[in-house]
Length: 329
Length: 284
Image 1 (cartoon, one colour):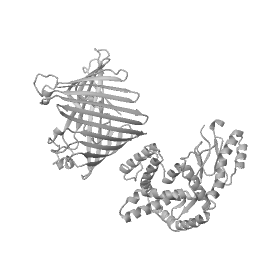
Image 2 (cartoon, chains in turn orange, blue):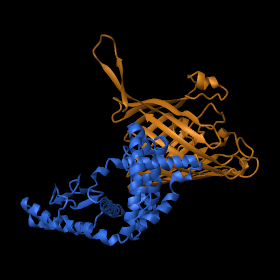
Image 3 (cartoon, rainbow over the protein chains, first blue to last red):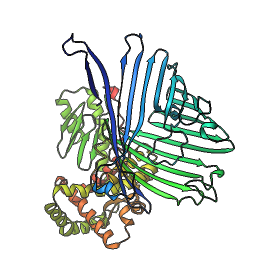
Image 4 (cartoon, each protein chain N blue to C red):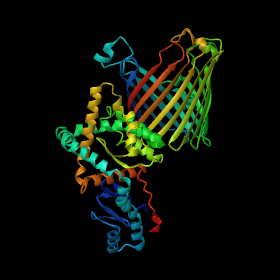
C-alpha cells in the first residue's frame, strides 16, 4: 500500500488556519537476488534498493492544470569496491546514491510537459524486456537527464511524444539541442505498439557522425497468453548495432511463465574496444525461461534460467540461474 | 443445475453435484443419501419413492446409477480372466506387505514428526510432478503442463528442493498423471486386470506404462547407487504410510475390493472425472 505523506506547511504560527496541503506518495522497493553462474561462486546480493517521492498539486491560478514532481534515487547496497571485503561483510554500510529521477511537470488537457531527469520514453519499445538476465543488448538508455518531454493526450489509444536534451555543460559548439527524440504508443484491444526515434548530435558525441537510434515494439495479448517483440537499431555513420528480442508470457492465476529469445548483433568495427574481442565477431544470443509468482500485490518471487551463447571468443557461453525476491511499497 | 451422478473413487463414492463424499453414497435428485453395502437399483428407487421425489428424478437417478452398478458387478468378471494368477500374486504381495512393508511404514510414521513426514511426502510429490508434467504434455493438456512447470520450478527452488509445497497455496493445483492414463487418453484399452509382484494392482496397459514412467523418474537419475536405493526405499515407505489411513475402509474380500476400486479409479482418472452418463440436467 502506498503511504501518503501529508506535508503540512502552516502559514504563520498563530494566524488563521490556512493549511496548504500537498499529497505526496512515497514509493520504492527492495529486490534481493541469488545468482548461480556456471563455474562461478554463488552470489547473494541486493539487486536494487530504490525509493522515491512523487505527487501533484492543483494550480489554483491555472485552471485545469496540475503541477507534478518526482524525486527517485537508488542506493548501492552492495558496495562497488571489489577489493573491499570490509564493504560487504565487516561493514554493512555502503556508499553511493544514484539519482534516478528528478523532474517537475505540468499535466492538463493539452497533455504532459515534464522537465528534468526522467525516464527515456523511447523505452516503451522494450515490450519484450521481461527478464532479469539481460540476454539482449538493449541500446537505448533507461533515463535522460537535462531533458524536456511533451506527451500528447491519449486519443483512441494513440499518444505521441517529443523530447529534447540540452546539456550545456558537455560542449559549447553553439548546438543548443544535443539530442532529440520522437515516438508514439498505441494500445487498444490487447494490441500494444510503440516506435521511437532518437538522434544524438555528432558534436555532443565528439564524433564525425550523428548517432541514430530507432526501435519498435509490439505486444499482443490473447486471453492468458501474451506475445511481445522488440527491435532496436543504432547507427553511427557506418557502424550499425542491432538487437531483437521475442518473449512469450503465459499467466496461470498468480503465476506467469515466460520464455524469451534475444539476439544482438555487434558491428565488427567495435573490435578491440573495451570489453570486446579483437578478432571474430561479438554477436551473441540468449534463451531465457522464467517463472514469476505474485505472493501478494507487492511481493514477488522469480526463478529464471538463462543461457548466453557468444559467437566469437569474447566470453565463454554461460548458464545462469537467478532467484529473486522483491518487495515494493 | 450441475450433473448428477455417483462417482466411485477407490472405495468412496462422491457426488459431484453436492460435493459430498461418503462411502456407499447414493445420489437421488439433488440430495445424497448414504446407502447400504448391498444397495441395488430397486432399493435406490424405493428410497427415492419414500423421499417423494418426482418420477423424472427417480428415473434419472436410476439411469445414472444403473450402469455404474452393472459395471461393478459385471466388469470385474469380464476384465479379470487371470483371476487365478492374480490372486496368487496378490497373496504374495499381501504377505510381503503384512510382514515387512506395513510394519516399516507404521514404524516410520511412529518415529517421524508429522512435519518431517509432510516434507518427505512433498519431496517425492515434487519429483512425481515431473512424471505428471511429461504425461500432461503427451495428452496435450498444455495448460496443466504449464502449471506443472510452474509448480516444479517454485517448489524445487523456493520450496527447498520440494520439501515445502508452496505452489498449492499459490493456486497451482497438483495433478496426477501417468503414462497409463496417457495411453488411455490415446485410446489404448486397459486390457486384463493384472496384479504385479511388488507393484500391486495394475492392468496390461498400466503395467507396460510403468516402463516409460520409470525413465522420467528423477530418482532413477541419481548416479550413486546407495543414495538412489535409499530414495526408492524411503519413497516406498512414505507411499505406504500415506495409505495406512485409508486401508481401514476395506471390507469383504480384499482381492475383489481392491480390484474393483482400482479399475473404477483408473477409469475415472483416464477420463479426468468426466463420466459419460446419459443424463441431462434440464430433465429436472
